[in-house]
Amino acid sequence: MYVKEIKQFFKEPPAHLRVDFKTKIEYDNYLKAKFFSLVMFAVSLLSMIIANFINDTVQISDLNFSFFVLSSVNALLFRIKQPSPNELKFFHKTLVYGLIITVLGWSTLLMAMLPNRQELIGTYSIVVLSISLVFHLKWNVVAALYSSSLLPIIFFAMPLMKEPLAPKVMTIAMLVFISWVISRMLYYKEIQNFTISRTLRDQNANMKAEVLSKSIKLKNHEEEKIEEIIFSVTKLLGIYNPYTNGHSENVAIASQKIAIIMGLSNEDAKDAYWSGMVHDLGKLLVPIEILNKKGPLAESEYEIIKSHPAWGYEVLCQSESLSSIADYVLHHHERWDGKGYPDCLKGDEIPLISQILAVADAWDAMTSERPYRKAMSETEAMLEIQKNKGLQFSPPVVDAFMKTKKYYMNQSYSAF
Ligand SMILES: [Fe+2]
Image (cartoon, rainbow, N blue to C red):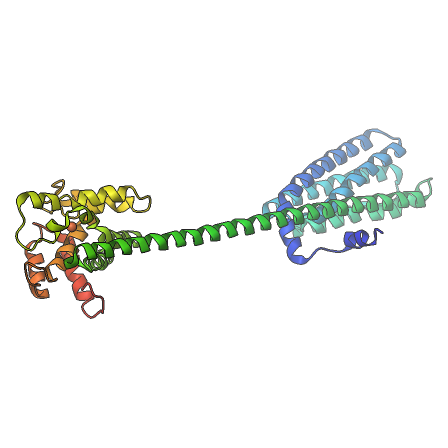
């Protein structure tokens, strides 16, 4: 019935689990072992002091047995402990001191009991101490030596005692076995808890990853929908004002290229693109007869057209994902010299992406056919932009535009 449990009790867990487990329990067991080491130290010290003042060998023997039990438990608890270098130093020190105290305590006891055997015990103690101190042994080796230092004492001292040897040896063996079982149970219980908590942690991590991946998919899907809507609106603008068909796409691509050449972040370059796509969105509110008028515009009509950046801004501000670019659209008709609209901003008061939009917008407008004029050649348009550098256009943007023009000259993009 319990065969499986018993088998599992004696079976070592897999190596990788043991390593993780030991890392996890390192601190817990460090505290446990530290506590036992201190108790061991205190009891052995007490044992030595008492042994010096009491002549009743049975009492002394009992005191040392209690110390032996504690030290055995301590040594066995170390079995499940894999200390870090600093902790190792601490254990080492504790055990070496414990060893000194033990040997001194037992020597005192034996000196009282065995006047003819001090030399042998003394020699053994000195050998163990010297090995531990000179070679700076690891805690487990010291623990082994420390425990084994008791053996000669038992074998040499017991036969000389009046009590029979067997019950003492049996008691010691039993105590060692009980300590081992306790440490084993602690180890087994701890590793079980660890396995359960790790499984829960893994499940939790998997769930989080799944939720994250779903939300990313959802976000991507939403972004795709927004992009489709923007494309549809620009198409609508192309139908409403056929002379500017394709203009939004061209301004978007040109603005993105200038932003990249100017070393803007990917995020800003994307903003430049989407600002280009929607920069003339407000024109949908301009009456069609004004927008498509072939002759020169009256002043009042021009004032209406000049409202399109503000109208576009108001619409974009309503959208959660596009409100961040609303400002760029609002200022795409500002001029570097402050003579633009709607706010007559000057120089760097104009958002950088709006400065970029102004150049890209002018470039595409100049190089496209309009009902009231023919398209300029690229050279003429470039000269015009250069001429207006520092007046209508931002000088750094014009410089970047010239570089962009050169850089993309051999590319197949439609905007340049
Ligand atoms: Fe515009």
